[in-house]
Length: 128
Image (cartoon, helix red, strand yellow):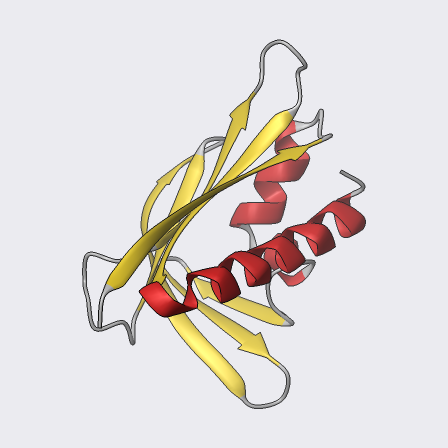
């Protein structure tokens, strides 16, 4: 099945890089919008949804106040990842959250809708 790389950008009314960085890179921050529960032991992060769903990922790259890239451990393609990247719009001083992810070509719209929903939750919980 054909895989597709998805790149999404969301403008956030965030003026604090530390609040946004915490939201996308720490277990506590990720629990606020991405997963119900998050556990981390240095390089491996476990994400929990509901009572039964769990997925483990490894952090494969990180640059503080810039981006964090995860690779699902159960993913068949070792080149696929999902990345949360923050950039600053110097004109408005707002932050942009860039998300890169991979999916089956026929599920691209579903993935976009899922990320849209997750980012809406991020906006509500962090006041962006």
